[in-house]
Length: 196
View (tube, rainbow, N blue to C red):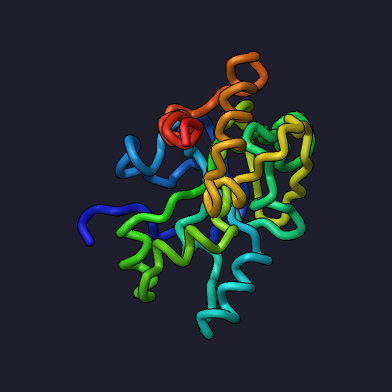
Protein backbone atom coordinates (compact mmCIF):
# COMPACT_ATOMS: atom_id res chain seq x y z
CA UNK A 1 0.00 0.00 0.00
CA UNK A 2 2.98 2.34 0.48
CA UNK A 3 3.03 5.22 2.95
CA UNK A 4 -0.48 6.28 3.89
CA UNK A 5 -2.23 7.94 6.81
CA UNK A 6 -5.68 6.49 6.07
CA UNK A 7 -5.66 4.32 9.19
CA UNK A 8 -7.43 6.44 11.81
CA UNK A 9 -8.42 5.34 15.33
CA UNK A 10 -10.66 6.91 17.99
CA UNK A 11 -8.86 8.82 20.72
CA UNK A 12 -9.78 9.61 24.31
CA UNK A 13 -9.57 13.14 25.60
CA UNK A 14 -9.31 16.54 23.96
CA UNK A 15 -7.45 17.04 20.68
CA UNK A 16 -6.11 20.36 19.45
CA UNK A 17 -6.96 21.21 15.83
CA UNK A 18 -5.05 23.80 13.82
CA UNK A 19 -4.90 24.82 10.15
CA UNK A 20 -3.45 21.50 8.94
CA UNK A 21 -5.61 19.24 11.09
CA UNK A 22 -5.73 17.39 14.36
CA UNK A 23 -2.70 17.15 16.61
CA UNK A 24 -1.01 13.78 16.18
CA UNK A 25 -2.74 13.04 12.87
CA UNK A 26 -0.19 12.94 10.09
CA UNK A 27 -0.96 13.95 6.49
CA UNK A 28 1.48 11.94 4.37
CA UNK A 29 0.30 13.36 1.02
CA UNK A 30 -0.79 16.97 1.50
CA UNK A 31 -1.06 17.54 -2.23
CA UNK A 32 -3.84 14.96 -2.71
CA UNK A 33 -5.10 14.02 0.75
CA UNK A 34 -4.47 16.93 3.06
CA UNK A 35 -3.47 20.52 3.30
CA UNK A 36 -5.58 23.40 4.55
CA UNK A 37 -8.65 22.58 2.44
CA UNK A 38 -8.66 18.96 3.64
CA UNK A 39 -7.51 19.53 7.21
CA UNK A 40 -10.24 17.25 8.55
CA UNK A 41 -12.56 14.65 7.07
CA UNK A 42 -16.02 14.21 8.61
CA UNK A 43 -18.17 11.13 8.08
CA UNK A 44 -21.68 10.57 9.42
CA UNK A 45 -22.50 7.60 11.62
CA UNK A 46 -25.80 7.31 9.74
CA UNK A 47 -23.91 6.82 6.45
CA UNK A 48 -21.52 4.35 8.11
CA UNK A 49 -24.54 2.36 9.34
CA UNK A 50 -25.87 2.24 5.80
CA UNK A 51 -22.55 0.90 4.52
CA UNK A 52 -22.36 -1.61 7.37
CA UNK A 53 -25.72 -3.04 6.32
CA UNK A 54 -24.81 -3.07 2.62
CA UNK A 55 -21.34 -4.58 3.14
CA UNK A 56 -22.46 -6.93 5.94
CA UNK A 57 -19.52 -5.85 8.11
CA UNK A 58 -18.76 -3.31 10.76
CA UNK A 59 -17.69 0.19 9.73
CA UNK A 60 -15.99 1.46 12.89
CA UNK A 61 -14.92 5.09 13.31
CA UNK A 62 -11.81 5.80 11.26
CA UNK A 63 -12.23 2.94 8.78
CA UNK A 64 -12.89 5.36 5.92
CA UNK A 65 -9.97 7.55 7.02
CA UNK A 66 -12.20 10.10 8.72
CA UNK A 67 -10.97 12.26 11.59
CA UNK A 68 -14.50 13.01 12.75
CA UNK A 69 -17.42 10.60 13.00
CA UNK A 70 -20.57 12.65 13.52
CA UNK A 71 -24.06 11.75 14.63
CA UNK A 72 -27.18 13.78 13.90
CA UNK A 73 -25.40 16.08 11.42
CA UNK A 74 -26.33 16.04 7.73
CA UNK A 75 -22.73 15.79 6.57
CA UNK A 76 -23.58 14.66 3.02
CA UNK A 77 -26.24 17.34 2.62
CA UNK A 78 -23.86 20.01 3.89
CA UNK A 79 -23.45 22.80 1.37
CA UNK A 80 -20.00 23.61 0.09
CA UNK A 81 -18.99 26.64 2.14
CA UNK A 82 -21.17 25.68 5.13
CA UNK A 83 -19.62 26.56 8.49
CA UNK A 84 -19.77 24.49 11.66
CA UNK A 85 -18.79 25.04 15.28
CA UNK A 86 -17.59 21.93 17.09
CA UNK A 87 -17.52 22.12 20.87
CA UNK A 88 -18.42 25.03 23.12
CA UNK A 89 -16.78 27.94 24.80
CA UNK A 90 -13.78 30.02 23.85
CA UNK A 91 -11.82 27.04 22.53
CA UNK A 92 -14.54 25.74 20.17
CA UNK A 93 -13.37 24.75 16.70
CA UNK A 94 -14.85 26.46 13.64
CA UNK A 95 -14.62 24.71 10.28
CA UNK A 96 -15.87 25.17 6.72
CA UNK A 97 -17.04 22.42 4.37
CA UNK A 98 -14.79 22.60 1.30
CA UNK A 99 -15.62 19.55 -0.84
CA UNK A 100 -16.72 15.93 -0.80
CA UNK A 101 -14.21 13.20 -0.17
CA UNK A 102 -13.21 11.70 -3.51
CA UNK A 103 -12.40 8.00 -3.18
CA UNK A 104 -8.97 6.83 -4.30
CA UNK A 105 -7.11 3.57 -4.92
CA UNK A 106 -5.71 3.55 -1.36
CA UNK A 107 -9.24 3.72 0.03
CA UNK A 108 -10.33 0.92 -2.33
CA UNK A 109 -7.43 -1.31 -1.24
CA UNK A 110 -8.22 -0.62 2.42
CA UNK A 111 -11.84 -1.70 1.99
CA UNK A 112 -11.14 -4.60 -0.37
CA UNK A 113 -14.56 -4.25 -1.99
CA UNK A 114 -15.19 -4.72 -5.72
CA UNK A 115 -15.59 -1.50 -7.72
CA UNK A 116 -15.33 0.44 -4.47
CA UNK A 117 -14.34 3.80 -6.01
CA UNK A 118 -17.36 3.77 -8.34
CA UNK A 119 -19.75 2.52 -5.64
CA UNK A 120 -18.62 5.08 -3.10
CA UNK A 121 -18.79 7.93 -5.64
CA UNK A 122 -22.34 7.07 -6.67
CA UNK A 123 -23.53 6.49 -3.10
CA UNK A 124 -24.24 10.13 -2.32
CA UNK A 125 -22.64 9.70 1.12
CA UNK A 126 -18.98 10.69 0.66
CA UNK A 127 -18.52 12.73 3.80
CA UNK A 128 -16.98 16.17 3.77
CA UNK A 129 -13.53 17.68 3.86
CA UNK A 130 -13.21 20.62 6.22
CA UNK A 131 -11.01 23.71 6.34
CA UNK A 132 -10.17 25.13 9.78
CA UNK A 133 -11.52 28.67 10.09
CA UNK A 134 -10.74 29.04 13.79
CA UNK A 135 -8.45 26.58 15.60
CA UNK A 136 -9.80 24.91 18.69
CA UNK A 137 -9.92 21.82 20.83
CA UNK A 138 -12.40 19.00 20.29
CA UNK A 139 -13.39 15.86 22.17
CA UNK A 140 -15.56 12.85 21.44
CA UNK A 141 -19.19 13.75 22.06
CA UNK A 142 -18.83 17.46 21.27
CA UNK A 143 -21.85 19.07 19.67
CA UNK A 144 -21.67 20.18 16.04
CA UNK A 145 -23.63 23.34 15.27
CA UNK A 146 -24.26 24.68 11.78
CA UNK A 147 -23.34 28.38 11.90
CA UNK A 148 -23.87 29.31 8.26
CA UNK A 149 -25.38 27.77 5.13
CA UNK A 150 -24.47 29.65 1.95
CA UNK A 151 -27.91 28.95 0.44
CA UNK A 152 -26.77 27.79 -3.01
CA UNK A 153 -28.15 24.30 -2.37
CA UNK A 154 -25.16 22.29 -3.61
CA UNK A 155 -24.35 19.64 -1.02
CA UNK A 156 -21.22 17.53 -1.01
CA UNK A 157 -23.08 14.26 -1.57
CA UNK A 158 -25.04 15.59 -4.50
CA UNK A 159 -21.97 17.12 -6.13
CA UNK A 160 -19.85 13.97 -5.99
CA UNK A 161 -22.64 11.60 -7.08
CA UNK A 162 -23.93 13.81 -9.91
CA UNK A 163 -21.49 16.64 -10.81
CA UNK A 164 -24.32 18.50 -12.49
CA UNK A 165 -23.18 21.34 -14.82
CA UNK A 166 -25.79 23.69 -13.33
CA UNK A 167 -24.40 23.05 -9.84
CA UNK A 168 -20.87 23.70 -11.12
CA UNK A 169 -21.98 27.03 -12.60
CA UNK A 170 -23.79 27.93 -9.35
CA UNK A 171 -20.68 27.31 -7.25
CA UNK A 172 -18.42 29.21 -9.65
CA UNK A 173 -20.85 32.15 -9.67
CA UNK A 174 -20.95 32.20 -5.85
CA UNK A 175 -17.16 32.24 -5.80
CA UNK A 176 -17.02 35.03 -8.39
CA UNK A 177 -19.40 37.10 -6.24
CA UNK A 178 -17.08 36.65 -3.26
CA UNK A 179 -19.57 34.51 -1.33
CA UNK A 180 -17.55 31.31 -1.49
CA UNK A 181 -13.85 30.50 -1.10
CA UNK A 182 -13.47 27.48 -3.40
CA UNK A 183 -10.69 25.01 -2.73
CA UNK A 184 -8.37 24.76 -5.78
CA UNK A 185 -9.08 21.00 -6.13
CA UNK A 186 -12.81 21.65 -6.31
CA UNK A 187 -12.44 24.59 -8.70
CA UNK A 188 -10.40 22.34 -10.98
CA UNK A 189 -13.33 19.88 -11.10
CA UNK A 190 -15.98 22.60 -11.47
CA UNK A 191 -14.53 24.31 -14.54
CA UNK A 192 -14.86 21.41 -17.02
CA UNK A 193 -18.18 20.32 -15.50
CA UNK A 194 -19.60 23.83 -15.95
CA UNK A 195 -18.95 23.68 -19.72
CA UNK A 196 -20.93 20.49 -20.35
